[in-house]
Length: 269
Length: 294
Image (cartoon, rainbow over all chains, first blue to last red; front, side, top):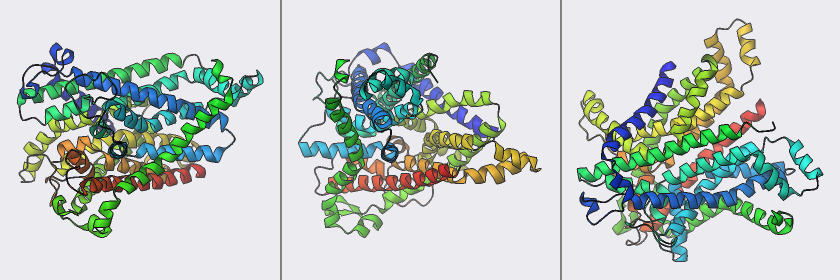
């Protein structure tokens, strides 16, 4: 049984180690400060700045959109619809189902909707698709904590004359701030790392997008495309890009841990 | 925050967002069905599902070899990861000090947060050479390493955090009195785990496996990178396969130029969606029945 634990820990360290071992030697300042120049995919100079910026745009956009839609729904389920237990549990059930839907299905769905409206691959289409994909994660992560806030807080707030929305967005949001930040971090990590849903919808370019209607490169796809090149130099850059993505994910993971620990100290229950 | 005072306007938005979420699953199924209708008209359902003939130019779309690969990779991945998760969960909740769990939890969370493309790169760097240089020669088989087995190993690592997290929750939720009663009656620790805890947790274990299964079934990029992508019925696990999600992802570029091709790929997504929804539904049923029992 101890072996199984050892396997899990070993595998994680092996993943991180092997990515860094191959990626870090080829990781230069040029890689993260320049967009691909002509002949980049044949081993000439340039970097993956377009993919890094594109991924950050996409992840920020999708996370904000998912938060704008997700936070109100999580509050609605627990405050406004508090008495309708069956309905709320039904919605939770649906969200869990949606959570399990693979991202490629969202990608294919987003793509067919795009065709229907005559849209081209663009940052906006990517943001909408990815936000749909992370929405269930966001809502369930917030809901899980809002659910357990003592009823007393709601009663106290209502008895002081505030309405349900004020209670939700001024009292509960503050009470659950650490959970909300954690939910944002998890969703952001999901959004920045997902490749299958942006494959269809966001497209790929070598320049940094200047508007949401333009296609955009993303880090996972950039890794994927560089890795399929037969040239060793380009493959090394793929490993370097993978190291960049891993660093971003590790930073997010550590950051969310620190933030949630910090905010957890001043809580009622 | 003045706008919060006027609840009527705000409520419209709140219920609108809720409505969108409730409509999402229906929209997904209906949208994909609508798109795959033309291929369903041209081919019969049994041809689509059980034929291996894949000739897009002649309008023949048989998904059997893709479905077969998907099922094989998924089952193999479960075979690797379920025992590891089960032992790890039993050890962490029954034997180890609670400090261990505090150390392991971040490891599980980080593993769950790593993007699938990174797993794919790791698969190419470590698993593929390992299989082609060491594992396959051991069985006397020559292979490039891009195989069903490589896909399954990468997948199994990816689903470990999901399964393990659910298992930990389930083992933690079993009340303390049950094992105590069993030990008071003279059973050993291992007997208690085997006959009391595992029996009590059984529906939960099944549902965690089903969750892992649906996760594995829909995983795209990581599997696509290591599985070899050859449409065939593999004879052994060292041969390459071509799972459904990989098919969809690999052909999105050219699918608009061939008639019915896009429809066929949308049908593939529909199959994925329906299977995953059914898996999830079954797992949820099992878990909810189990929760009411305690």
